[in-house]
Image (cartoon, rainbow, N blue to C red):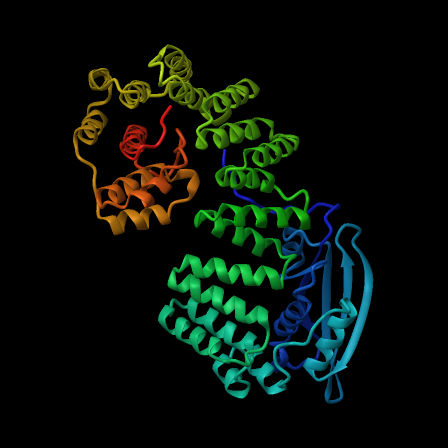
Length: 487
């Protein structure tokens, strides 16, 4: 079963997470309240790019813990004559003890630079040296800030983000374009983030993947960026790239929750079943993940057309936990056995597995048992039996299913393409097969053939439940039409 990759705190990881909390204004001057958030943002930016450290903003101590921080940076600032003095204390999140203290004074930029260097010697300078520009940026006067310093990357990014948050998409895109046109724009990270925002606003997934790739090179220890890059590459079917990002997450945080499972799928989709098996088996050794890892192994072998192995793992998952996924392991095993026995035209073993699944659904008082049986008969080529079985199905549902089975499903090529590209690989069976059919109808055989290399999964989400029963018959029909092997 596909799970989303997330990241969890683990003592053995090699990259430390530093949560920068808001700094308290003790000056008594409310006109300096903006420094409370601006200074931590500057520190976070200056610490970025360190392969052994990830700095994150946190609005509170609780947010820091939720962000799996190893250390929390508390701070306050006071006035010392005309200068600003910033004091910070670094707390060990596990021991709740202060491990570092630092203070610095001067103007805001000088004080922040000194504090950042105390926290990490490799800290770099902020993306402007103009105090007036920083003051305008900190007070959310972004247009004024870039007017003072046209190469102030953080201000351009904040301006585009603020417009996006207000729903002013066209204006945000224009600001991003103006920023990116600046050859001297400071901070490679800010440039990459502006490119990423622009790609998102334009709904350009290819540009999004490129921007994320650039950003993770700059900030290689940021697991949230790596996870975003991995998900983007998966959705673009760039499976080797996705696998690389998942591996990078594990290098940063070896105990990252669910990432081994996601890596297994990426390797499986990419065609490296040995690597997929290794990842899933490692995932299965984590507490409580044995059954899901077996299910994932079954799906990886299924999509590559290795149906005997798929059936074996589905049945092992069912034996491990009969209640897992509402008993769907038996249904998946039935599909694997049917496809594995297709040449022999022997449905007995597959029907037996499906019978076990339907018996489980009956015991659970599933009102759709008769419909599920009709769908199975239709998928496996017994159309008359399927139509007859619909007589036992609730009339409205039966009419809907009958209409789908007797209709000619089609659609505009561009619409089908968009639907396919917007559907995750784990649930793209319906979208992919009808897009492939449209491509073949247009004579685009090579493009259609590429879409039919991976088998759809027998249990998916996100499609039309009435149409799902057409997926396997159409998929097999298309493979035969293109001279591709079928079981």
